[in-house]
Image (tube, rainbow, N blue to C red):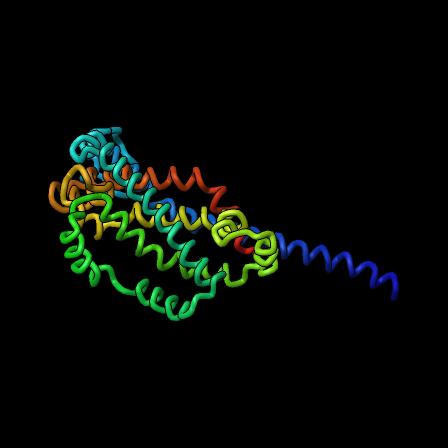
Length: 291
């Protein structure tokens, strides 16, 4: 009996290891399918951007290109002044991300650490503002920007989108700071640290990965923003990449290869940005999970 049990135990462990290995391959296959589905639009835009109109008409959008023509890319680059639009998008997205992170941090510090009165009510109001559609906010913001002389300026878009992102950032950071160890703050107070010193020398170093992730999300969200830049930036020199893409496909042309070229050039900077800050995102999410 003892010999039989000693033989069956390795057999069971072998079968268990085989099932576990098969399960890993199944999960890997599913992830590869999702990866292919995610990358498919990018490759589709790249294939169609280098096709000639005749090649596209003859073979369709799903066929591999039988030609290599950069005319559509060059035309979009020159017609919309893409370097200028790219600079505007980077400037607006970067400034908006910094503004939204700073405001979110200050608001969350007051609600989560300072425990101000009505903090929960403020969070509820912020959540309601997150759910409000932008179409309902455009006219009041348009009228206010006209009154203060900020219409058709990138500063107006930075302020508006930055404040809108602050609602989500405040909710996220306040929930994190609500569980911040009070012992660390009390130790800093014993050392006669002021509130500003506690914020910038104690809390910010701990939250740096979370703040980096939040800033990255704000940058990408602002880059993809279309409605507010379209309404508030009427001058060609102030428009962003997303607005240039919308104007090209809507008014100037309906040529599929030109639209594919615009999509490719529009999405490439965000892909490069994500690849550069991929480790920052991974570390920030891991740090947030550990906390």
